[in-house]
Structures are given as structure tokens and as C-alpha cells.
Image (tube, rainbow, N blue to C red; front, side):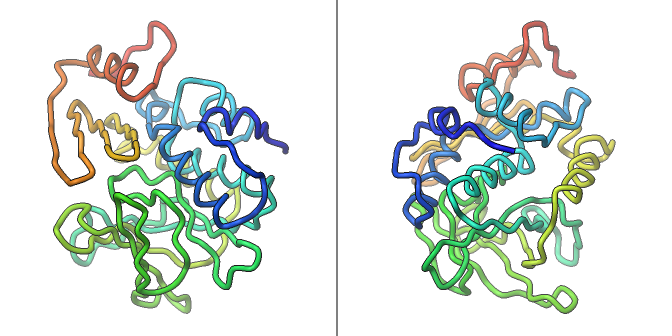
Length: 272
């Protein structure tokens, strides 16, 4: 399938030379993060979002919507391949909020991107709905800090997951004053049918958090805005946070439109 690169780049506000270079990868990644919001409204409204590329373009590129990890990263993978990058799709176990000893399923989608001439691939991920998300790709190298200002990230080698080496993405200051685990992954490739199964489970399982409450994120160069249920949190680049509670589902829809740029069809009602 082909993708409309002109429409995609207009959506994220990116202009540049369309070649598979590190600078292009970095700038497109950041522009995507700041240009298209994260949201899980389809599962909240009772359906699993389509991962077919034409549907993703209609929703995230031509529409006034965002999506969650499978949507964002499927779209970006198609863009990067069209630009000449080699992409390997991966899955991760989310560690944010996990208790010691918890073993969570691999439900997060990310990817490795090969840059011609670079010695190692780059972890690439525009779909992690957290303040600890990558703003720019990070090379698959242990211990090296990436300063994707205003954030800082690093990768560390963790325990073995069977015969495969496990990597953990950490963000500095996301939840504490130190390095906070975000997710753990191996470099085992996954394919589109794998994500179809995971997407359906996450969107429709009655105990899935994504099917039970609204989550939305919008990132700018100096601010991170999140909506969790009816709680809006604005985090400045210096870590200062402001919170406010919304009164009802109608106010949630109004905030999604005004502050996140997410517009649902007229007459849409969110669960109370």
C-alpha cells in the first residue's frame, strides 16, 4: 500500500529533504509527536480501531483525530518505509505503574529503524501515551543518554527474556527525580497479524484500561498535556504540574476539541 506523504507531512507541519538520514528520522519523529495527539476514544466508544493504512490516513492524517500506539506506529512505519528506511516492528511490556514482580503482557508497539551508514538501529516510537515517551529516536546502545529536550532517555540491558536479551527504556524525571522504567522489549520481530490480535484484546477486553476511561495526550516543545478520565494535567518543561477536574462528559468533549484538537462526530456521547 502507498501513503500520501504530502498530506502526512502537511498534517505534522514538516518540510525537509525526503531521504533516509538520521536528521530526517529525528525531525519527522518529533514533528509527529507534536503534530498528532494520542487518544483511545474508539475503544471507549465500543470499537477496536482499524489498523488498515487507508483508515489510519483517514483518521489521523485527513481527520481531526489521534490514536494509540498501534495506530501511530503503524502509520509512521509506512512513512519511514516510503522514505527508504528499513523498519522492524517490535512489542514491549509496559513498566509504568507496575509493581515489583508484575509480569505484564507485551501490548505496546514500537519499532527499530535502520539508518543507512549508522552502526546501530534506532528505537522509534511515537505512540507511547505517557510523559516518559520518546520525543526523538534513541540508538540501540546501552547506557548512552539521549537528550530529546526537554526530556532525557536511556536504554539499559535488563534480565534475559528466555534466550533473548531484554532492553529497558528509561526516562529521567518522568515520575521520580531519577530514572524511571517505561517499558521492556526484545528485538524479536512482530508482524501485522500480531498487532491485529493485540489491538482487539486491548480495545475490547472489559478489564482493559483503554476500554474503560478516556486517555489523551498532546505534546508541544515545552508542554505536555494529558487527560485521564476527567483529570487534565499540564506539565511544563521544568516539571511544574497543574491539575484540574472536569465536571462531566460534555466538558470532556469540549476540552478534547479545544485543548487537544480532537473532534468527534456531532452528537457523539461519551460514557459517564
